[in-house]
Length: 95
Image 1 (cartoon, helix red, strand yellow):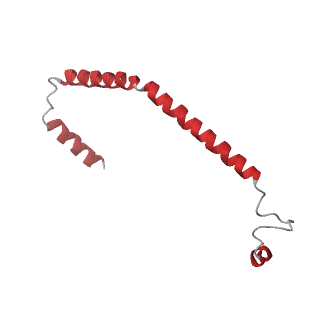
Image 2 (cartoon, rainbow, N blue to C red):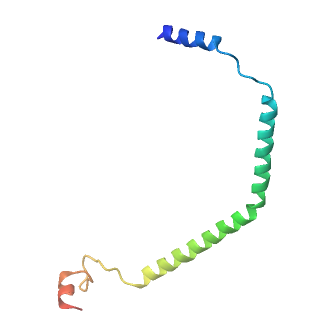
Image 3 (tube, helix red, strand yellow):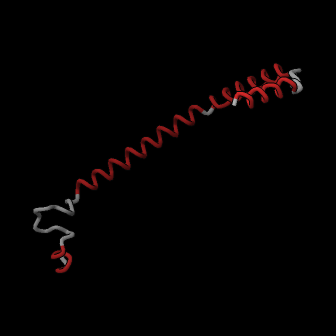
């Protein structure tokens, strides 16, 4: 394995070097683009916050409605209930 690694390093040493002219300018231009993108995304922050609050409100309203609707009707299955809604005797008599 070390022979293969030595061969790869020898090939890498003999390979021509990459042109590094202008690399620093390209790096700084990318950094500037990322900074501009972050600044523009901050403009939409109030809209994002409003969407989160609206989704939270809708979820709370729907959850509380479902909880109150479930609390109003009796449980369908009860072990010792005489009038269990899913009992075979109830289903056969048609009550």
